[in-house]
Length: 117
Image 1 (cartoon, one colour):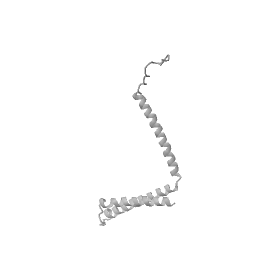
Image 2: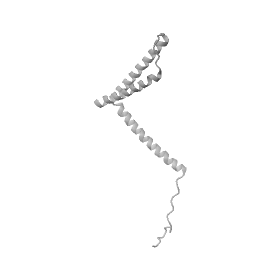
Image 3: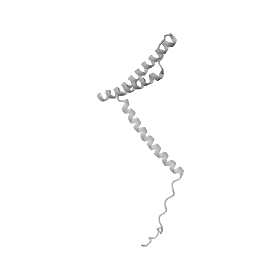
């Protein structure tokens, strides 16, 4: 085998590894591109949801449920503390599992209603 003029006789040297600054610049470019992609996807999803009437209905239902819950708790405390009625004391450890059940039922029924529509 003959050597061609102008080529080194040994193996070609590897380029030096990128510096820390170069790696961070590359990471920054990748992160910016990913952030822009996620932002575009989120904006498209928001626009789709803004035109979906079931989202508005679900938001109205959730607002009503939370409103009624706050009114009930407020009325309970008002009757017990301000008016002096002797209402039964309900410990939190007995109530919170019922809250989870109610939230689960709402999710299930809402999902069934969407499939039926």
